[in-house]
Amino acid sequence: MKSKTLKKDKVNIITLGCSKNMVDSEILSGQLIANDINVVHENNRRDHNIVIINTCGFIDKAKEESINTILDNADLKKKGKIDKLYVTGCLSERYKQNLEDEIPEVDAFFGTMELPLILKKFEADYKKDLIGERLLATPSHYAYMKISEGCNRTCSFCAIPLMRGKHISRPIESLVDEAKKLVSRGVKEIMLIAQELTYYGLDIYKERALPKLMDALAAVEGLEWIRLHYAYPSKFPMEIIETMKKHKNICKYLDMPLQHASNNMLKAMRRQITREEMEDLINNIRKELPEICLRTTLIAGFPGETRDDVEELKTFLQKMKFDRVGIFTYSHEEDTSAYDLVDNILQEEKEERAQEIMEVQQEISLEKNKEKTGKIFKVLVDKKEAGRYIGRTEFDSVEVDNEVIITGSPKLNIGDFVNVQITNAFDYDLEGVVV
Image (cartoon, rainbow, N blue to C red; front, top):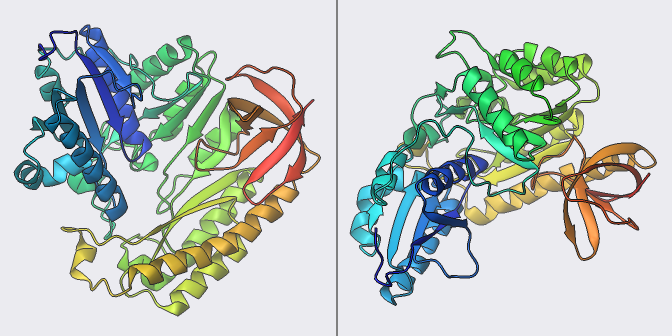
């Protein structure tokens, strides 16, 4: 495709939303590069002439950010500063017709599974043999790896199945091959992501095959950390914990979104589990693997949530003492079953409840961090900011968890592992020195 300037096209891919979107953008980049097309991520130099926006449609704030980004780039196109504007991802999948009507400056909208159609706009061929060949949007020492697409769960608040479809697992051989290619390019940590990890394999192997996948990935030479994100608590297969115990390079870390702790809310959210069952599960996991770091995500302000529900959730946090907690305010999403409920809590009140809940977790986080003072941890150096190196332990994932600020250090290499003795503890961060 020739641009008005007759210069070689340069494509800027802007990714919004979750890590799963980031992987999609990286795969798209790899395909374009294989077709001899110049690609950059989040280009600040503004020397590109084509923009592809990979949108998020998960909650209201994400949708607003996506729309604003499209409008900003539509304005650049009207001013002649870019030649072509394409939009893909979840928002485009869900609201394509509306977006086409409202923002005619966009040259084409694509759904979440329409990568080959995007490539056609560049007269490019989809190359099936490019497993693992992607332009990483992350630093070169870690990468996300999507083990499945879509979701078969029926949580009442969630629109993901509407945008991503039913669960489709990728074969183990394909994932191992991708991991080997990533490691050959310098990746040391791989974060396994999916809408729901524990469902992996049920469609293609007729069994929950995540433990088998973990075994296979743990055998990849040079892969030092494997991290699990987004496990579903109902009918959680404890074989995952047994497999985690077997392998030194599988981080003792599990991200398990619980969403709430009040049985009233769990039932309304269609989570297929009770508070009592969640407590038993967490206790069993910690009994099997005492050093495990448990992260969870919660929702504040679901329709019908009462003050009693909020207090029950706070009590649950104080009792279970999760290592990491994130929280969203409820977003009323069309075509979900919860959309039939009355969204009866003001946004301001939702945010106040979320803040109240996080204040409970803040105290727990500080308490747990103080327990680490004086101890030595293996730390992966992620970046250098303001003259200080910043890294993570195996108990922390990128961007969402604690960071380790390394003080008084000689020159370190980004992507190296170092042993750090913790000298100071804060609410959500640690400080230490290389030993």
